Length: 109
Image (cartoon, rainbow, N blue to C red):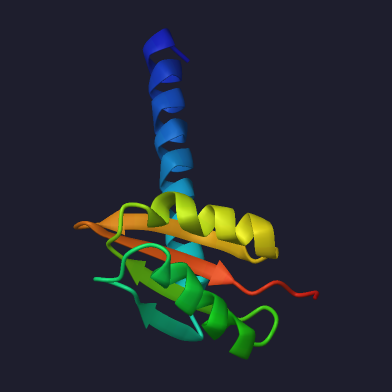
């Protein structure tokens, strides 16, 4: 095998690895199915966290809530809230100024 062919093979395998990572990410996203969705857009701190706390009290352990928020403070508020309660942010993202938090209710009290 020439150096060029060997290098080409490495490029192809890297490309395959990247494709596999993208496919894995897509599968993970497909697997997240929230049990409840709460639209907190328009609410300011501390209301989104207060309302989500009340909703989480009604959910079963392991259930997932999708929270939509547009308050910039939510970026720090929800991680701090989950650190305090033991609930888990399994995914967060921002799209067109809307923050999305997928929060899984803790499985133990």
